[in-house]
Amino acid sequence: MEKINLLIVDDKPENIVALEALIQRNDINLLSTTSPNAALKMCWEQDIPLALIDVQMPEMDGFELVEILKSNPRTREILVIFVTAISKESKYAVRGLTVGAVDYLYKPLEPTITTAKVDSFIQLVRSQREVKRKNVELELYQAELIKAKELAEQAKQVKERFLANMSHELRTPINGILGISHLLGESPLNEDQRKCVDLLKVSSEALLGVINDVLDISKIEAGKFRIIPTETNIKSLAKAVVDLLKFRADEKGIDLNLEFKGSIPKLVMTDSLRLNQILMNLLSNGIKFTAKGSVDLSVSVLELKDGEIQIEFAVKDSGIGIPKDRIDKIFESFEQAQEDTMHKYGGTGLGLSIVQQLAGLMGGRLHVDSEEGQGSTFTYTNWYQVVDSNVEEISAKPGISELAKFENVAVLVAEDNLVNQFMIRKVLQNWNLEVDVVDNGEKVLECLKQSHYDIVLMDTHMPVMGGFEATRRIRTEMLDGVKNIPIISLSAAVLEEEKQQAYDAGVDDIVTKPFDLSVLHQKIEMLVRKKVDA
Image (cartoon, rainbow, N blue to C red; front, side, top):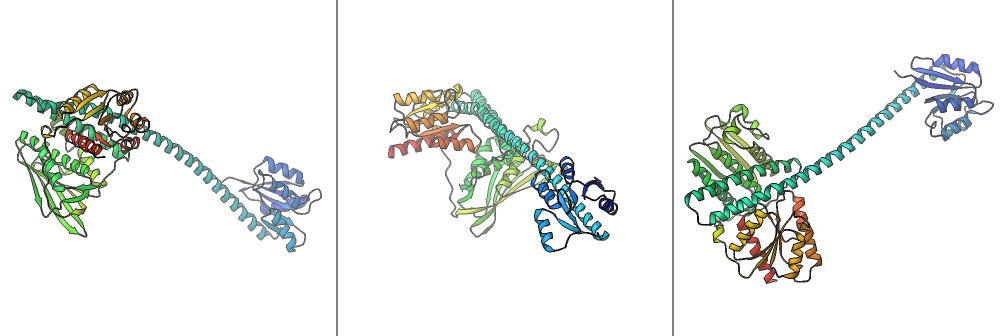
């Protein structure tokens, strides 16, 4: 145990000897002096937390000595006990406590009281020192936490920048590939050529799926994943997913079935994009791991109360199944049911992890029942607010070749990727649009000053001047009639912050790469009509 220095100050050596004999103990290191000036020097030079000071001394009395000690920041925290033979009148006690003493001992000293008081103040000193030590540790820990927080924030920012850059660099070329495959699909082809185009679509969509899985996991881990409920037609959404995946099932010679059970409302509130993602993942997995038989999606009403409905989506397949000891593993990132699953069937092992996390973020529950060799059933259950309880089927959206043609509409496209330039130009020209293409924001400004356009399609990331800056300058620097031109941002962004930056810059709408051409057509049509009606 650390020894505590205790200073005794008394002008009479015999009193010092008596006190030392009385309070001598192993955990105290006794120091003494008959001179107040020497006491000041000792307190200044040594670590003395406790002092017994006589009141009456010739060159400087105890009150004056304590006043000096308390006036110095280095010695003001010393605990002082006055030892006095003068009157016990309260005025002397008040003066002593006023100058900074913590207690009094009266001569002749009573041994039991003296040792008890010294012991209690020694314990107080030890407690104070422990508190100080803990405070120092706490301050150091807080400093380490602040440093760790700063490093974590820096790492988070680096990760977000990497995520944004990778989204742009990966999704932009995929957009070109998918767009050109659509264009080829609309052109006259022989049977072999059409098979090649179909394979190109399948391969590029598979690559896009992998990219989306990796980006989604990164967004979830970065806390950048948002659930945005909108009015959604559950039956229409489920049918669209099944229709989209039917060709995969047909290629494998298995049935893909859809069944609705119960009275499903026309509209409920949910994040349709994420629900679509859950169903796509579960059905794609079912098809991937089923060699014969069927994959069935059933959408069932479980309960209806207080304007809310509980719906269960069950995906049942007759595939390979999952071993009992691997069921929990399949929801972990990069894990699959068997060690050789990736080699046999492909995939990243991210799909089910994303589905489970999406289900949790949306407030639902994901459950799996499976038996090896007998197939699996994945069920996703959630409650939804009913918006429209009527049942009404929505007609399928038109194919790309069925989209309406435009008349006398000029479009300025800003896109620096050559493949995307070619693809967008061809698509827009097929819709009878007049198209000019430039590769940076500065050229956009020049074109708008020289020619008339009805709408601008603006890429986000471009050399010389990016889409955000070009949009801001159009909104603030152009003449009336031009500054309000409709602008659609062609964005490969996956982070909501980057999408918000586009809206803050002044765009009217966003089409995310790789974009659905029918969605692009719809947005162009809506904004052009809005401009004409204004």
